[in-house]
Length: 390
Image (cartoon, rainbow, N blue to C red; front, side):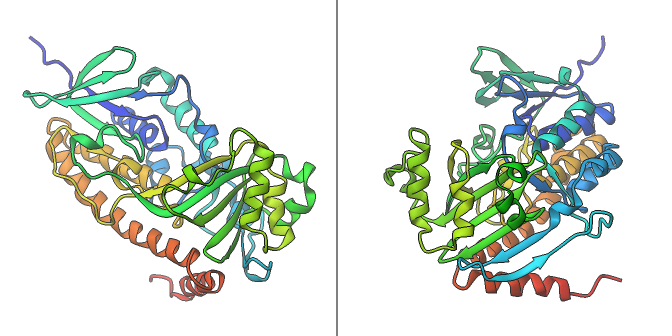
């Protein structure tokens, strides 16, 4: 009589879930990803990502994708311009095309996920499986119920399903909290050809204009679009009560959005004027800094499911990939003792993510506080002045 192989299920096929499944595959440990969408839509989610050396790049290195990643990454995407609402420049960082220079090159989310997916293979992913509920069984396994009627039982369940995780309720009653920040995502398509004046103004990386507890953020993506985030502090119900017809009448929505920035420099307002009709308003959520849950032997979380935070430290995807790396290594060390693997992983994850959550929240408070451009300049200059470790 042979032992039945243990089953590992990952909920969510974003960067974290894909990285985890790929690393487990390379360690010879089978897993299955259940993804709610009918196909890979990562290229439609988010924009350009800066991948950090100590986290995201470390995971890619372990996965054997480091060299390929660097052939796809955009070092010039690290360029950064910072100004206030008048267009006054506070900081301008440039990167030479032939000089990588820094350790946080940019890559579009869709390109990154395609890189991971090509290495993993789609046979490890079940698309069209929306998790409706998960139940802990008396034998320690977890029973998964999906919207399509499928039911599965697994030995280890990993929630890689984002801010509004359906796995998190197995571990805690803690829900995400509104951060006080609302962002409206827009896209200026084919900027270099359609709007060369804005493309020249934005340059090759990011542009932050911060003032009056608001921000217009522009980010050049690899497909030539400028991803724009019109951002501001607002009450949680503002999107429900503002009356702006974001979907029904994009032209009118942009006019009303421009009213929020009526006294901003005309060049900055072009980020909204030139945007296409696809407008995506969203609230920014977070989990409490230092958040932990009661440990269970067959369930854990990675990425935003474990520690969602604001995007103002650039840590979201990097933490998800770091979590995947540490969890995969722990499972590989203890393939017959998931409880021990989870314990080792969670201890590392809690320590690393809480530090990053503090940094992220501090950056948010600066970016949308008083004298934001000046304060952020001071902060960034202090980082540059710190001595390198010997």
